[in-house]
Amino acid sequence: MLRSVSTKAEARLELPLGEKAKVIYKAILPEVKSTPYKRGRVSLKVVGESLVIDVQAEDTSALRATLNSYLRWVIVSLEVLELVK
Image 1 (spheres, rainbow, N blue to C red):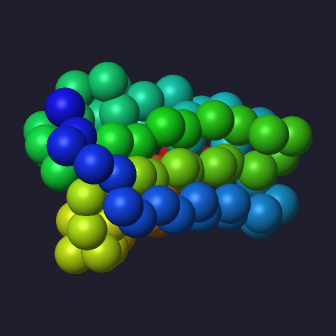
Image 2: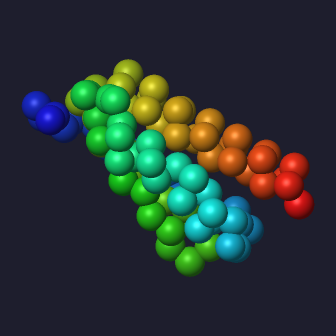
């Protein structure tokens, strides 16, 4: 559990994802539920055709690392979706 959340970021990916937003959400959701990070917490949601990643962390280093990890997973998910088209 977080001692004191001092940093927060929200990444709203407003790409023309359409139904891909839900597919990516479902692909990344297990990471949210079993996150190994003790210095931060993440929530994930789909709003319209956008994927929203909300990260709260104890410090900017943990915030950056966590957000980068989730953004990489989104990129990989998009690349896989392009391959299976």
